[in-house]
Length: 159
Image (cartoon, helix red, strand yellow):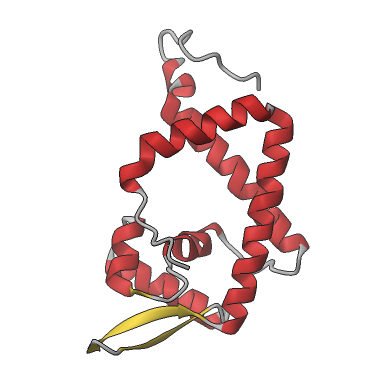
């Protein structure tokens, strides 16, 4: 299917050419490639839902309620996702030292290795995207998206 040119949509074609749809298609392609690379590296258990958890999990650990908020999910749905990742050995729940009733979700040692593999897969996928789109286009995309979505970035970079 040929890519639509923004601004030329008429009738119902806007449904395929609006920025939200184009961004969603790009994310699906990018994340699909990351999952493919993860599988090639022996992590075929990785699903996009797992990425949603680990994308929002601080390296030093994060409360379940905060993970749910960051991912725009219910606490119950995030709890199920944490359970799945715990079964895979990627994360563990530990008591919060500041509130024994609360639990903190943390990467396990295997989860840290998985996170390193995930970072490598993202790097490869991004290099491939840069090669296809060109440096100037990628630089503009990264800069524009960083500015546009800045207030929605909830991940703590203190790692």
